[in-house]
Image 1 (tube, helix red, strand yellow):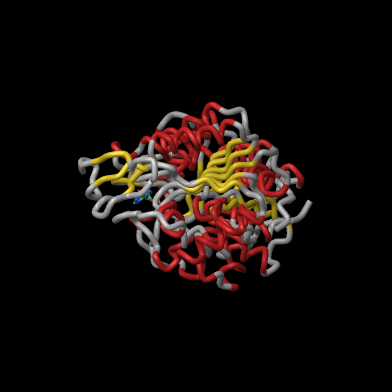
Image 2 (tube, protein in one colour):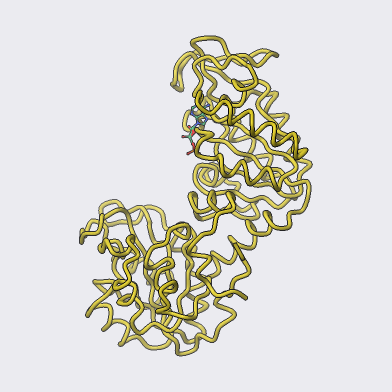
Length: 399
Ligand code: AMP
């Protein structure tokens, strides 16, 4: 996928009506937004467009209303919060298409901001319905995508209105620009050594990512439950650890591919094991052979592995990390994940965190501002690392 895409800086937006797909899928409890990170993340693009005299029409989804109007999922609280940040009136349109949307768009003056109601009140949004795309594009001159979290979906607002040709000028906002710069840069032209760290529950979720990264990296580190499938494939005893027995052949193939490509493939050399899946289970560290006895399960990497993985991170010039090293939700099994986050916070390498759990871990530990880039999309960043085309990026105008 060509990632050299035009941004808001490459087009004249003065006096233009810009439809900006943002990610305002924020957690809301009793009408109050409990985490405003995503709204804050969208501010640079919105402010840039306002300053340059664009009419800024924002659209987003929120939650899963399943194609029906359900005011539990209204975006109105996001309009209020955004107005506070911008210190300006944000007009909330009670519909994303039709009369209410049309009127709000027609009344907008250069510099004004409108937020349309939740796109997913229409099933046509996710179905990428052509008529819905036509309705959404009415009166729109420029399409701006700044929602990386949905860029791997071909929905009406993420790709459709451009794919169907209803809007010709299509550019990225600053959030997507940064995603493409860092993740695209790492995949296309990384500073070496390039180290990738993958963790999490299942090998099967990340086969595509492992396959693609084996073409690019110098070292691939595997932790988390995923590692046990590889260890078992190498003939180790993994006890009651999470393990995908139907993926052992695949694991062996991936290890062979790493060897053929001369990619260093690092697996845990010791593990923190428990006699039950619980924070307060009996626990110990496996011995030198790394074997996990029957009735015990690996819930975190062990101290020697922490040293091994941290050492590899230290020598890297580019690091990509996706997925925890253990059951980090349990305090007693969070050490491996914390250690990787800490090692990343200390290196001068380009550090890229691929969304989801790893992003949450880095943020909770207070290391967020030490990372070069924390992706705003879990699923989208995985598909990107897999080398797949993201419709929400592919539809944007090439430079
Ligand atoms: P994923 O969504 O695939 O990135 O997986 C994240 C989940 O994997 C987290 O909820 C972790 O608790 C879980 N996980 C990581 N390591 C282990 C392990 N050793 N055993 C069981 N679950 C694990």
